Image 1 (cartoon, helix red, strand yellow):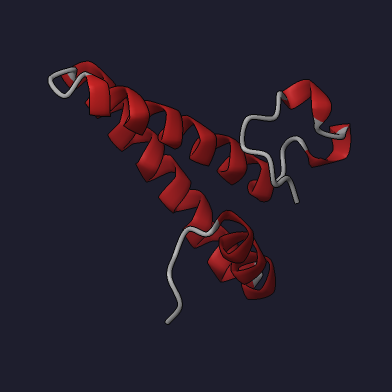
Image 2: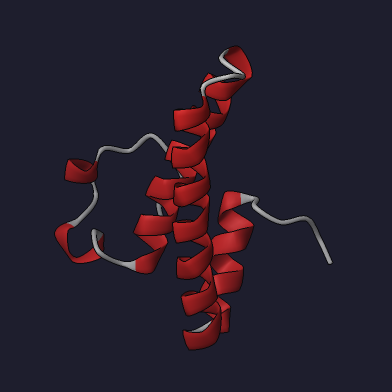
Amino acid sequence: MIKNLSVRPSLIPREQRGSVESQVCYLTGRIKRLTEHLDLHGRDYSSQRGLWKIVGKRKRLLIYLFKKDRLRYKSLIGQLDMRGPR
């Protein structure tokens, strides 16, 4: 799994570029960048809408991964520190 969230797609091995894990990692990086942008520009509603769309896409990918392979899901959540302990 990719730990650095700012990795360019060209640095990811070809066989892993389309995997759910790499897509979620990429979307998480975009979400963090947009969140920082919105901290500075709170009234940028078009960026806010884009953030909501990205969050929704990541959520759908995580639901898919949860249904398909829970071990990979838990591993990904742990590596990205997305959820707190339950």
